[in-house]
Image 1 (tube, rainbow, N blue to C red):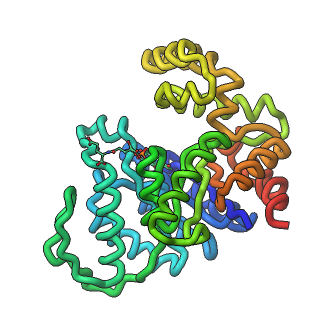
Image 2 (tube, rainbow, N blue to C red; image 1 turned 180 degrees about the vertical axis):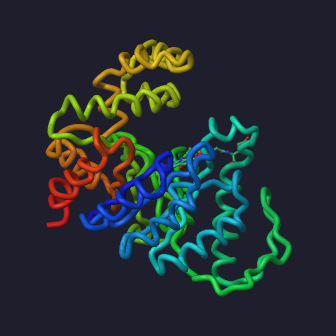
Length: 331
Ligand code: F42
């Protein structure tokens, strides 16, 4: 059965996300993911609050990275979070957002090694092992926790590039693919499955999640209006190869990039086309969203993550998803 996750960005305070978390849990969501960027509130403080507010939903970083936080501290934070939310914590790790890292002068060197080594250090430490590790990016000289951590915490890898997708299939318990369109998800599933096969694992061993930009409203116009700013930023950050895959006019995309750079949001959002919305979000009425999610499920995803903006009004949108979309997949 398809699992449903929901993403929250801790630009919102902990109590608001706590409220949404209780609501999401009641409506049957399986996973809750909190994003990690230095310019928002702290991911672990937010997750700790959510852990106290909830009882069943699985909690994870969606995603943290090895450059801002040393893997040892990531293992410590996740293990401690598991004390608050026993057996319902997962680690979500990715290379990190390039733009955000660059804003503070942090270089993303050897992302594949950094992620691979983080996963290894994380697993060893949370298995209670003493870790003397000599990697290409990280070193530990006999690190060991003085407390008994929970072992076997699942690791999800945020991945887009072909190599990271394959790595996620190979070493991850799950993969979070930041995409909404069947073309992109189809490509990602293929790469993840290659990694799974290479490792000699079964396809069911890896939870493949579409981590989609999502906007639902009974009124299509309202859904589209809410999705527009998020899609504008996705288009601006997408390489031309990805835009071409979706037949998006490169000139229009360039104009959009320039308007965003100049903080001319009116022009930028005004140049978002229906093709862009279709390529980079799951957006529309509940029935339209059900149709798209069902397409993605057919392609091979096992979790659908409802990401920003969720809807015009987040509280109402969560209710709408819980009452009109989830039942189509769970009943
Ligand atoms: N990033 C954040 O900072 N915060 C978040 O909350 C967040 C959430 C999130 C959720 C889902 C998701 O899929 C991604 C998310 N991200 C978030 C973004 C994530 O951190 C990454 O930026 C994003 O996934 C893009 O990374 P990628 O998987 O495409 O990997 C990049 C680094 C890449 O270029 N990969 C290439 C590939 O083919 O996969 C490989 C590049 C390569 O070969 N590198 C060489 C190597 O050894 O690693 C070295 C090259 C060199 O010269 O350094």
